[in-house]
Image (cartoon, rainbow, N blue to C red; front, side, top):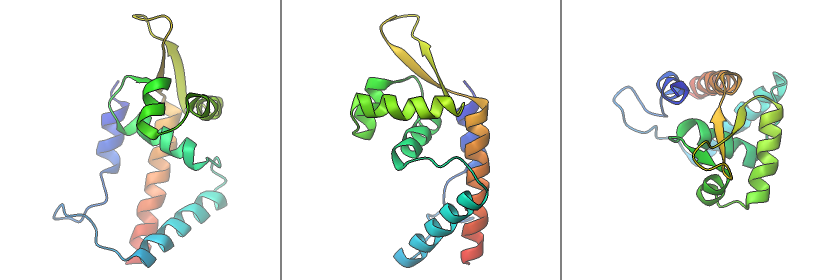
Length: 134
């Protein structure tokens, strides 16, 4: 699916125009994160837990396929915790589950357009807040 590459090319990574990682202090990093979270609440974006955020970002930024077992291992979460997080993300339309045609016992976790739009909007909001720190 192309959503992952589109997402990555749209958002880029936290780098300067020369391609080097941004150099910010711990205080600036915490202030940045406070601003991003505050704005997300003000915009009434879905209130995702840290686990849900980590899972969503992993699905969108890492190459598929994604399974509950693989996500649990990659994120150091239990399979039931991954399942609960996926339940919430699925209810929001940010991911979808599909039975693996090669192994009917396995369920694949896939990206969705609404999930990509949510992350794009969140990334744009974060970029705006990063610019405000300068």
